[in-house]
Image 1 (tube, one colour):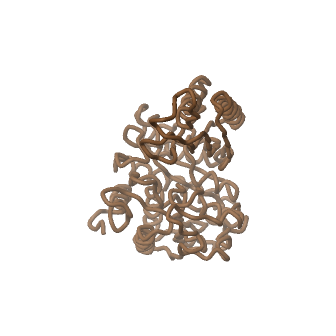
Image 2: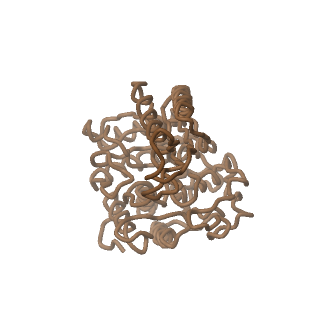
Image 3: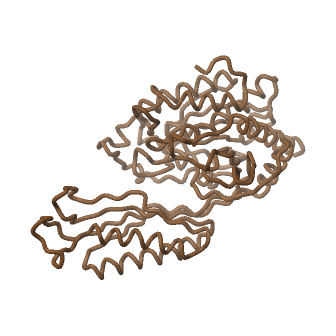
Length: 415
C-alpha cells in the first residue's frame, strides 16, 4: 500500500489518503473510524507495518494504543513521545490525527535509514479515542497513558448498546497503560491547524502556545407533548421553541463577549420526533471554549443563567449537566523555543498561535512537557471530507519535526 513513494512528508499525506477508505473506514462513501471498530483494527495494522518498516519495535498497550519504539543510545533515558490519534469523527477528514502519527513514523524512518539514534528512545504513539465519536467520552486512551483516567470512567456504552468492556479491551487492566512519571521526557504532536490563520498569513507551519480551556454541557428541556392539531398555541408548553431561543442565546452571548470566547450547540434532538406531535422534550449540547479559563467560566455562567431564565419564562423544566471540563493547557516554554528554532532552521518564519481545538497533548501535559506544531490546512477546514493538506507543507512540517528532535538530542548530549 502506497508503494513507490519516497520517504518524507508527501508519503505521510499519501498514507493518510490510503487510510481514508475501506477497510480503514466503517462508513460507506466517507470516513468514519471509531475506537475499537473493524476499521480501527485495520488501520492499526497498516500503521504497525509502517512502524516496523521504519525500524521500530511495535506493540499495543492495555488501552489499545499502538506504539512503535525506536531505541536510543541510552536505554534508561526518558523517551521522546510523538503522537496523535487514529480515530475520526463521522464523515471526517483524512488528516486530523493520522498525519501527526505518520509524520512521526517518517521522522523515525529518516533516522533509521541513516543509521542514527538519538540519546533517548523515540516512541510514536497512535492514540485510539481522541474524538469520542463512538463512546460518550473523549481522550480515553491518552488519559490512560497519562495516568489521569479513573476506573469509573470506563463504564461506557456506545450508541448501539455495546459496552466498552465488550468492545475488545480488558477493563481490569486498562489503566495499566499509564506510563510511570519520569519515563517520558516530552510529548510532540503535529496536527493540522483546523483554522484559517496560517493560510491567511501565507505560512506553512506554526508553534502552538497552548490549548484553549473547554466546558461541555448536556441540556434537557422538558415541556408537554401534545397533538399538533388539537392543542391551541396559548396552552402549549412546547420544548422546541424554548430550546431554539436558548440556542440563539448561546450564540448571542458568545458574540457579545467580543473576545476569543466561542460557544457552540453541536447536537440537538427533539422528542418524540413525530411530525404531528408537539415536542415534549429537547436535548442539546453546549461547548464553551476560550484560551483564558476565567473568561470561559464567566461566559459559561452567563449562558447557563440565560437558558434557565428562558425556561422559567416559558414554564419549561430544564436540567443542565456539566459533562466535560478541560482546563487550558499551555505548551512548555522551552520546547516552544526549540520549535521556533526548528521552524527557522527549516527556512520558515516562526509564528506562535493558540489552539481552539482540543488535542491529546492537553492530556499528556499531566505526564510530561508538551510541544505542538500546527500545519496549514486549506480554508481552515477540518472534521469534514474537504479537509486538505498540501504535501509540500507536510515536507516542511517533517523538516521542522526532525530539527526539533535534533535540537532536543543535542541538549541531552550536553547534559
